[in-house]
Length: 173
Image (cartoon, rainbow, N blue to C red; front, side, top):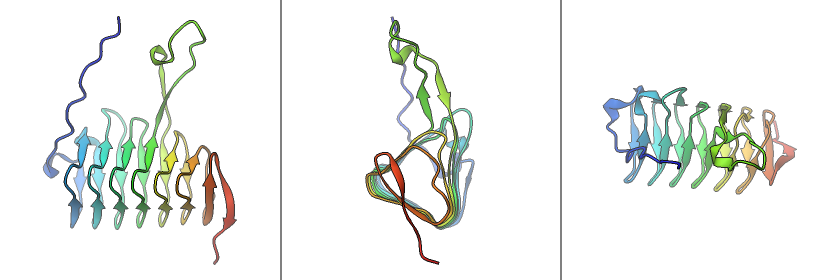
């Protein structure tokens, strides 16, 4: 029989974080797991009820001048690195792990996990409700459309949208 255990409630203090810059705002309801593996730059806003799920391995690193909207869910088991000047819309999800397929004879939940990092370049804007899947690199200056499901890398200075997300156009110079 499978036995689940609590991961805790995510309550934290700024002093528990791996690193924290100047002028970081945490709105009410923000939760952080494994704060010892979470680093925030300077001038970072973290919106109401955001969940920053560090992990006992790997790091969640957020650069300077970033804005994370309400209800953001960042699961950094495989590692997440977010550059400077990035806006992450409300209810965006970034996931860095997935279950392997064990075949039909076993439940998927019983399969081993695989981990892959997510990297978000400087100056990006991730639209409301977008989902970024394991192993994706979002290049510099990329705009991700609202509700997009990003399953593969996005080249620098492009606009990607849809499910699965695809390049819609290059951004103007």
